[in-house]
Image (cartoon, rainbow, N blue to C red; front, side):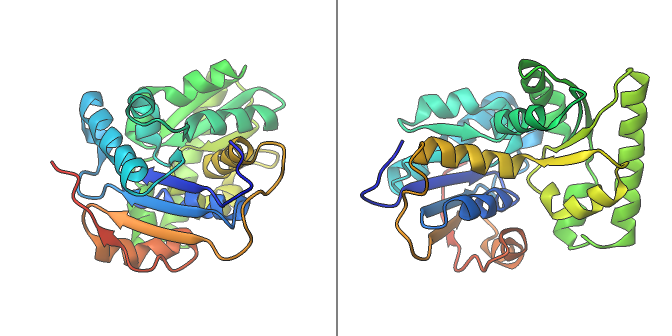
Length: 276
């Protein structure tokens, strides 16, 4: 999908605002594109819903971005929706759709020499085993672990807090022990939640020497840029990006926390109603 006449309009969807880390990575890859970001904050957490409900919610959000915001390409910056609703989203909209799981697994395959990797994610994403399946498709063996305490710690702003560092150490110690028990020698850790890039330095300080971190947000942005720009390099017009953020609830919280995830002011977030 190449368009040298104008900058592409890229829709980015998440159940909350953690997916702003994916938008941040997209801005680094394609700074001149126009972006519409939707956080379905009224209906989160998706992880506690049925697959059918998640698929309906995600499809409605995708249709909003395409039909009302003119998105020409969709990035599903939500691991749960990528794991459980990607096919439904693709059926709902007539534009290319990219989730975060396949690019993360592909990046892990390109990084790993032992072909043994570890994945940390939310409980819903781990329960889906979507990363394990994607890793297998890339010739990898994966040990997955749910780390449910990390999202609330990030949202509390405790990124550099000693409590967070200790919890990360416990999770990683348990994960490394599980990998060893399975006879694996992992050399790569995949961050399978869009909140986790904010803790990347904590992971890197805690992991054994030689274990590298793969950020699925960065991998997804790189793959989106490749698909949109093709082999022509940066085809978007130079200049500041247009970023428009929408939420289905809690716009004040979105505006307050969003800049922490995006590393830029998110501006005025518009409230939209997608129904129940």
